[in-house]
Image 1 (tube, rainbow, N blue to C red):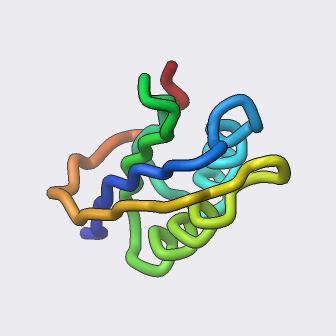
Image 2 (cartoon, rainbow, N blue to C red):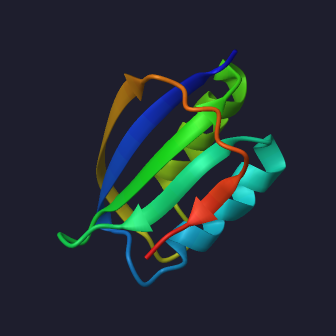
Length: 90
């Protein structure tokens, strides 16, 4: 069984394709979970999979797509859920 993390990314991360880029990375790395915009302007992602794939996704979140300016990221490990796929939410 893999691990699951919750990451909240702050900075200029909405309106720059952050959720789309995260979903594309999830497909490449074979992880499950979701990504969504937060009302405060941040982005939240929950990512589940093998540790190496989750770590690769966290590196992607630290950078973001062109046009993003990541100011910070808080990460916490949470219990795995066994999701079937990766969703982009509102």
